[in-house]
Length: 328
Length: 271
Image (cartoon, rainbow over all chains, first blue to last red; front, side, top):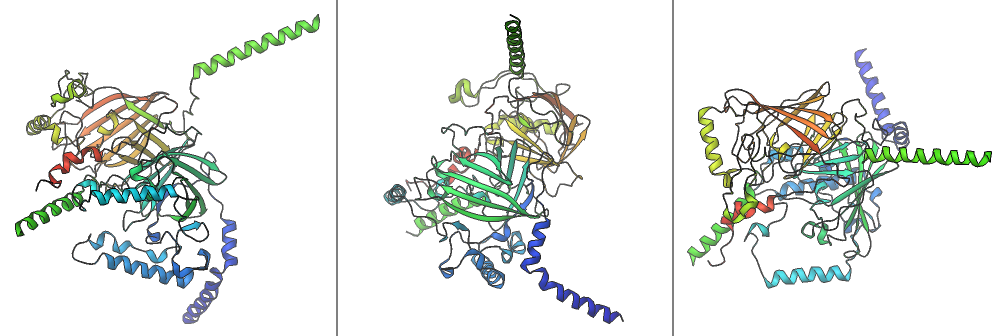
């Protein structure tokens, strides 16, 4: 009797399973879910978020997907791509010198990644061509490096702003790394605040329609202004410092327009439109979901305070020079 | 005749009304913010800053010169009234000796010089503004200095998972006062530029009370049995930055401290 009941339950579960994943049911579920509102009536996008599962997704559309759209690549195909990416990530950290595995490997869940690449516009999934001005600017920078060659660790200034624990900039601060991919969004009627665990950034975005700060005030994270467009928070950020301007763009003319839209019980869709007429021939947009995850609160990341890495990189470089001189 | 009279009356009324409306908005200045949040709590949201010399020395102190003569008057310490209740910090004798060493070596020892996160309560009264974002269930305090911040948990109290620079903060309302209980500190931060310090046994209980729209009373009770003979308290008003365009401007000071911290590791081109 008991065995019969169990068998019946299994059969019922099997019958339900394919239905649950059918698009029709999925749409019905989407219709019954209504986006939450804050007590004062704004769309509610608050919470702790993680985008660890989106780690390793290429920005541009890989050549292997030529002729296919982002929506086409799903299910087993997507899972196998993500599994391969996860394997590559773990392999890339193999070797004698690397961070302890338990810092990050057990949490890595790239197999849950939701897309095969990030750029949604232009349709070819590629970063648009550089303007002539940007080509000349980048060539001049490369020439300056050739004229005055430096080693990889002559000083801290030869290391990245990330190595130096200064900033990952924008949109870099929201791009997942192997650990520390927790974020928090908080709202009031006048402000939205976004906190990034890596490497401890806080953006406080006014919603009151005020003008941007003077162009003379430049920062690594830029000057952000936000407003609601229907159910979407639109954040426009300008006034970047050149050293941190995204993909070597022009900090004074770069304008990033982010959109945050709650599209499901645990999902906020985040997109970024990148615009800099001095760098790209047209604006372009990439997107990535942020997943609400209360088990991943933002912890204090005292990157600079504990930056033994930079100290060791510099002292190791000096030791190598010393050894080379001794061998002469 | 009758008509002209009523037009005049109407004009008079309009002029009177307009001037009343004008004076009312002139008195208000900036638009009045709601004094309470949607959940009925006092609304502490805003940009705040201390206006005293606590950051140079929590205790009463005279003006004094900089340790670096090159900075002239710019680097000198302004004298000022202390903010410690009873005047003196109740150090244990061995801790007082350490405080004096800290003061003597402050140019290399003060964590502020190295651009380290300032900890609590120091972050509150540095000569930089900080912003309170009072969201439902969570209160963010973001500090201009070193991009430091902390989130005050207003739900069920949580234990500090590990020791940190900014501590673990649990908040609750006691009538009109926000009480924040802070634990889980490391021993890396100081209280001021005078070398006042603590151990990792630090426990700080803060009280924030709006005196009026633009003044926030701040108190912190400091307990650390390893360093002090008894708990002691500081108090001061915080002032709202009322400028219409007030905003925090990133002060990412790491790059200002790198030569100091890593200069000895730079490649020597003469070798």
